[in-house]
Image (cartoon, rainbow, N blue to C red; front, side, top):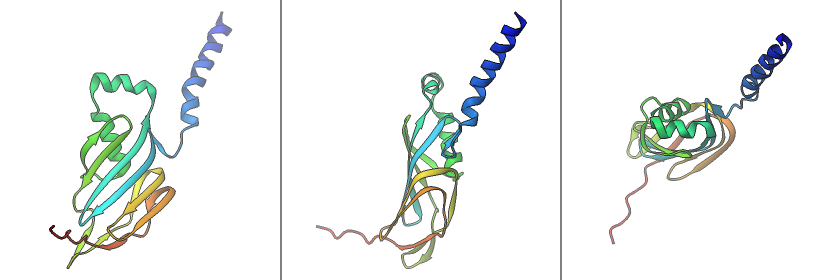
Length: 154
């Protein structure tokens, strides 16, 4: 009987430890990041995050809401001042004011940035340029860009 209990204990510990040992760098808690897109609009960054959540957490979201999911995504993005625009169980949109520095005359600089997970697909878009990265946790060099001129009136 004692051996059976010990065997069950070892089995249960193995079930608990296996997910932790198999953890990926693109994962934070119950969230696995798939893609992040940062669209630069003058000093503002519009950030779209595509991710998946563990199946077991879906019922918790139904009962308790998505505040914990929002907090974890902000931690992943590493922008404490990000404002959530939209969130569901696979996609979220955030706005970060003053993400880029203005040098006047429509010239902006989006500095290097580090995320708190490895991002399988990272896209940074300015009005003039799009930069794509794979399997990285940082946007390494920063990006200079010009503001988008207003569209002419019809």
